[in-house]
Length: 115
Image (cartoon, helix red, strand yellow):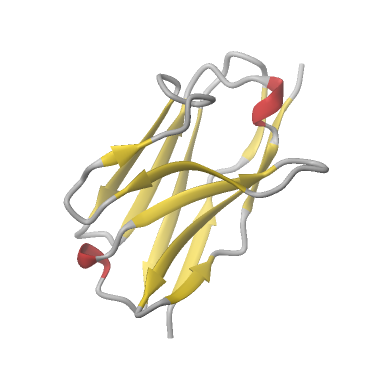
């Protein structure tokens, strides 16, 4: 059974940093592309970072230069390092992958940016 479990969210001041983790189980992690999405209050879910099985990374302009996605294929974990956080980064953050055409989501971890 595929499971994705996020952690690392919390309350942070503007300009601060957080590192999110997503631990995967039940899958052959190293062959899968992994993604981080977020959904802010009243907003649609949006992609914020992607990493392929080969380590190629992609980011939207809204987080480029501030967020870094990485993966540890030994720990079956994908990370999202978030620096210089802004109020608009407040959201629930989800990790995501697709296995044999089926999309899997974690339960999400809340990030709140507030002074």
